[in-house]
Structures are given as structure tokens and as C-alpha cells.
Amino acid sequence: MMIIPTRIFNLSKQASAALLTSVLFYCSGVSAADAVTLTLTVDNIRDDSGHVLVALYQGQEAYKTNKDAKNQMVKATKGKVDVVFEGLAPGEYAIKMFHDENDNQKLDFNVLGIPKESYGFSNNVGRFGEPDFEEARFTVGETDLSVQINLF
Image 1: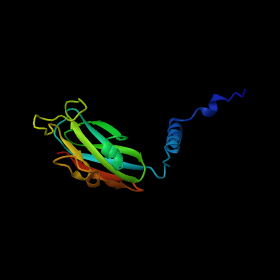
Image 2 (image 1 turned 180 degrees about the horizontal axis):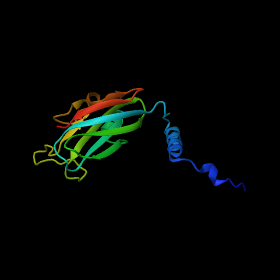
Image 3 (image 1 turned 90 degrees about the vertical axis):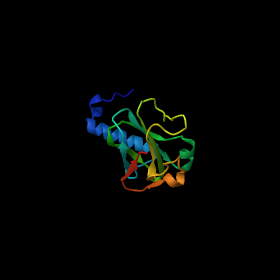
Image 4 (image 1 turned 135 degrees about the vertical axis):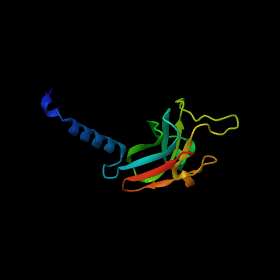
């Protein structure tokens, strides 16, 4: 049995974080060089209540079935908030989101079926219903990008 001195594994926090990031990228099939950061700016937030829930879908099938989304939930701030997605592979993506003012984690509707809470989609489409993937899609390439969505 080999005994390894523990001081060999006594890494600094920065070195530990870098090692963990490298391992995660290797396991996910995305290299650090291919990983892209998406910064989403959400505008037209009515008030500070609740949270903004964002679902980022890669590809038409994930978007249609509401599966395999990268989800983020951020505290609502009147006006706007930024949401950051890191480690994205290049490809076609679309976003669905809403301002969950009462924190029940669902979009609430009135008796006529009209949303009571603000919602939005990438490319600022879908004011009168959920758009299809082709309308909402955007391309993540090789460089970091910023997207802006206005809530309806």
C-alpha cells in the first residue's frame, strides 16, 4: 500500500477551482477553449417581488419538450437583471422566461387564460403566445455574447 503525503494535494483555492473546472469541462465534452459565456439582460421587470426564472434550451427538441434546459433563478430587481450562463457549447439555443412575482414557480394566468405575470422569449418574440423554436432561436458561436429580452 502506497502512502501519499497530504501536502502534495494541499492546493490553493484558485488551483482547486481551476482543476475542478478542467475536470468538469473534460467530463462534459466541452473544452475550456470551446466554452462560451452568455450574458442575458432582462428588461421591463415591474417590481422587486419574487424571482425571474429563465430556461435556456439547446436545440429544437429540447425547446419543444421543455426538457434538458439549463435553468437559472435570480432575485427580481425593478427595471432589469442580468443572468449569466457559462460553459455553453456552440449551437442553436432559445430562451423561455417569466417573472414569478409570487414565487410559486409557475406562470399564473387569469380566468381568460392571459398571463398575470410578465414573460418573455429570446428575440423578443411571442407577445401573443409561445413562439416556435425557429422564431426564438439564436446562435452561440465561438465567442461570448450578450442577449437582451424585454418582458411582456
